[in-house]
Length: 209
Image 1 (cartoon, rainbow, N blue to C red):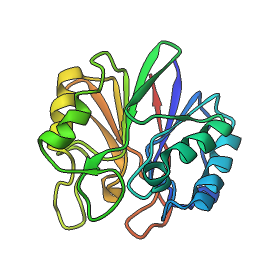
Image 2: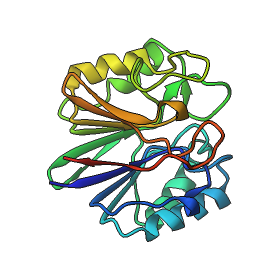
Image 3: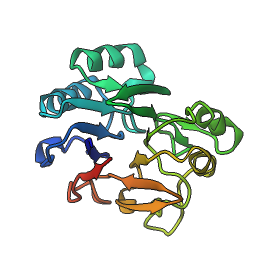
Image 4: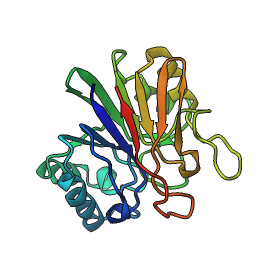
């Protein structure tokens, strides 16, 4: 039974975070603030030095290097022996894990797509036999409430998740939505480590599958 450690939205505060031991370490994006190469490499060096056997990263809307200079970002990530997932999958110990960085349009950040059909095309790429789904943004109505009371999650994403029903769906993006819940057989985890003030006050979440 693999022990999965989930975190997201660390925003350059990684040195202040105590990461529990586990088998698989997942980061669901926003490792940086401005997505510069220096910020990215600092994060990757920290992430790669953690003792977990498998380390998986999906970019977030702050992680500009992965959108503007994708090839360079991928080469850096591979050099640190970290699995980067962008509309792609990996299988670990029999678990089929799929990751995607896209989100409904959110100001002028990275990996923005329009709600509806445009972003829905990305979610159609998620294989139906996915066990663990990693996206940066949440599905609509699941741990996605903003401080203003809006539900910021993606409507097309929750439709796809309800269809394929992965065992675990990890995301972040909406810091206030931190936590976990279960619905229609899926364990949902908003693993945002930073709170609304960008203080790393929220702990990584452990899931046993």
